Length: 308
Image 1: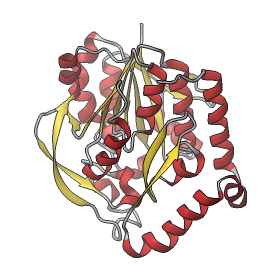
Image 2 (image 1 turned 45 degrees about the horizontal axis):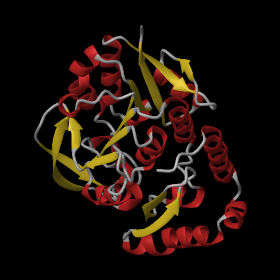
Image 3 (image 1 turned 45 degrees about the vertical axis):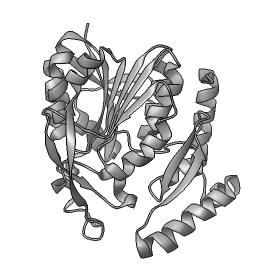
């Protein structure tokens, strides 16, 4: 596995941000074939048949990824997940994951952060990825199956071992796949892109980590409303160990409470909440919902570190 200097990674990530912030014409000039392919497919073909299209793209960290359009458009056009919360998270991981570390990716989607983590921890490290949606997992598995330090699982992460109801959306909204579907019913797009209800097996993360005998440096959680289930199933592990938890936190407008309950649980276990600044460093924050409202954000990745 070829390692990349962290300064080079940051430089390449800066290019992702630059392309993302550019005008449509500038993005067209930067990657003309990809841009025309992605935009025409989304606007002409997907709106008619709602069928995804598989493509391949190279990430800013040098790993090729399979993606499904239109949901993978940002990576396809920029080489990375280009939302501000995601570029800041990428910087945080680059700053904090080292050779030999273990990284857990809960809600991995196509594996962008899993593959970045794999690059950062190297052959001596380990990455474990969980993705519940079967269609999305097929792409994740394709991206990760040939990476020796990375294992992926088509499982929901919860606080019980069971067969759970899971809701899988059409591709354009596949990043909203969730155990908790009611939070989307007031969204304008919901009536046109209703999810398919399926059954998926679940795992308790704390028990999984004990069985694998691994002690992660960072656990990333992006599960669209099921955050409390993940943390509750991890709580016994967290009383003994102190991994860094990175959890997506949603604005109050979404109407989901899982992240609030998970935050209370984490704070009862001695964790302190932080936001990630533009350099990938941490800044302590107490009122997370107030912060999102002040910054006019629908969501952000909040980092929880156990106090010493």
